[in-house]
Length: 395
Picture: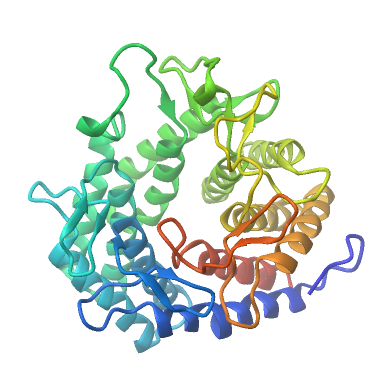
């Protein structure tokens, strides 16, 4: 379904598009192909038809799939098959996912033996999200305890996310990463039912200050990916890096907090930042949003800088729908139509289900996989669910 940019807003049709793609295409794909019925957990390395091409299990993707099915059980419909899929992952993760100190590994082999050490906190972030949703769905008190322990891990390690596994030489060029406060903002909202109001507000205040007060450059309206500890910009590859997808995803997290707090100033500032990022990140020649850019226009360090990725476009669709729902700003609708027409015509695979993940700059499918080391059951179903809810509310 393509949209004429100036056409009537047919939110009933958009609601059905998001709903049917989620329920008839994406979720059945993962339910049919991803469950490892021999050793537990999920396969994420799936080709276009859903066949497994690698059996390693990446902890953050295992947790993301638990979260997806438990979240849909909690918020959409209490379907026993969805809860069973979530439980399938939980049982595997409880047995194999953590080291003796309670830190979550990065990856395991098929049987659950550790392959890669717990070298950053993102496995812990998604463990907290997953077990929080599963505890709500199942009433399992053990899952609640695991969620809180993982959340405490994230807070404890946020100033040094990689700990002993950090490759940087200490003291020469210290820097902070946007990834930590942005994900902590979303994670804390996910954990609200387990946190005291004082703790919830304190962490949300911290994340808003960090994202909007330190990483956001007021002059350009762009979000830096890395900054010095004192908040100043860095003139090096990492310091000049722009990741439009991260910036826009962070902004819908900020809108979410603004909506919760009825903070219209925060909402509008986040929307302005979203649109500024789109203006900078959109490929004027072939369409689509670049993966990486250098804020000074130099050649990016990442050779994949001009690829077009699934999650970048999906998070942008979520941000624009939320922005339009909250403000009815015409510029948000115009951009939504542009990104919608690009993404739905290229990433969606109606023949085999799910979405492709990686396009080249011209918009052709670069890798036909549906899942791998970085793509699992998360961004597509989450965006489809949120798109459905936003469009339904506007219909």
